Length: 179
Image 1 (tube, rainbow, N blue to C red):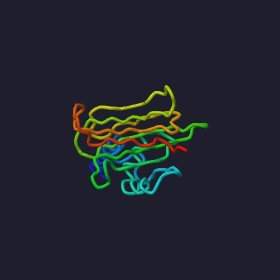
Image 2 (cartoon, rainbow, N blue to C red):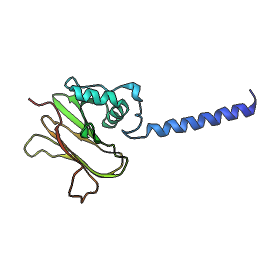
Image 3 (cartoon, rainbow, N blue to C red):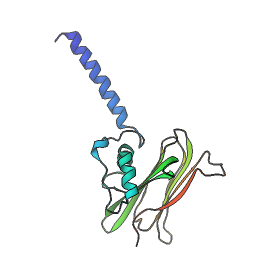
């Protein structure tokens, strides 16, 4: 090979590496670090609707799992406020740590515009502290982690602005399985 061809190949490779590197740093709405082929581990308690959301958008489910961290399994996913009018997607992941359930949540913004979002997980214990993330987000709120989240709740709120009196989304869901 000539020097010019080698230089051209190296330049092309450098550009490809840079592009792949940028993709690896993207958010749940984009391609996950491990890519969509890595798959999302589903919690045994994941219902049919959760499985359908994960199957319809495996890249977002995987990217949210990467944001939550190692060992988390998708327990719950829902398009909000409805499947037909999806402005956001709530992803809830759990993992067993010793004898306790830990939870992680991501609230994906599917509007394509910056919205005020609040994501909160609260335990079902007296005096237990909630974990939350809120602000103006164009991509997602979270991840929010809570240890010992058994029977806790996740709240997902989306408004046009923090001072808006009307919510686009106002949902409360269970963080973990509960008897």
